[in-house]
Image 1 (spheres, rainbow, N blue to C red):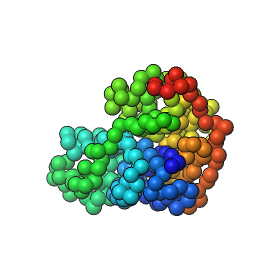
Image 2 (spheres, one colour):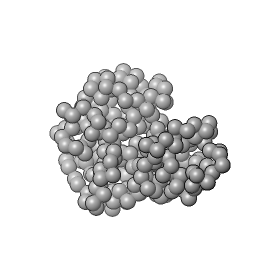
Image 3 (tube, rainbow, N blue to C red):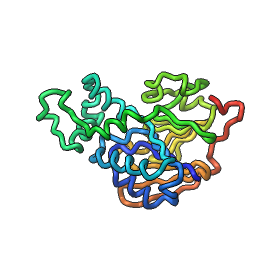
Amino acid sequence: MKTFVIGDIHARPELLDQLICDVPWDIKTDKIILLGDLIDRGPDAKAVVERVMDMIEANPNMIVLRGNHEQMLLDCLDYQDLQWLIPENGGIKTIESYGLDLRELEDISDIRIPEDHEEFLRSLPFFHEDEQAIYVHAGLVPGEHPSETDPDVLLWTRDMDFYKGYEGKLCFFGHTPTQYLPRERRQRRFSIYIHGGCVGIDTSGEEDSPLSCIQVESFTLYQAHPSGVTEVERLKSLKPSFSNELAHL
């Protein structure tokens, strides 16, 4: 069984479908980890959630993490928190993908997401760990295991100490588009970010940006571009290593 990690999809189902077709994996048995932010900003959050739920039903080795955008949706439903509906956060596009028009709703509590979709989003964990790596949406506190960390940090952190100082167990994260991470650890505009023990793979910051997927064992990068082209890049020589003594951090 191989392990694949996919960055923030942000409601672009066509890019996920492109990876499904172009990546040389067994979609029903290989371990596939999604780092969160399935929804918002893109045109069809509903389709992404449906596609991912179907993938989970067919593959017992599928892991989907909670992102800050899933959390904002839940906070809106639970507490009528309006942060999700700020235009730049993209929640309005998600509402529209479910056939709702915010202008026609009398109250925020009138927002309705299909029950099975809501239950799925509520079930998403804040991190995952296996023998190879830690997987988290936003990042870690260096020297602290994610099980000991406030979930808000795992969902929201943007910390230069992590980006430039983390030397623990290999960690894959999303949340911050790589174009905004330190330039010296990126090779090109939409490349992934590698420094110390951390690997940032959120390359979905713009309309023309790709969706990135890494095969962990071979450290092969697959990037599905909106043009329909899927680029393949072998990064084995750049794969971070970590000491067994640090493997628990």
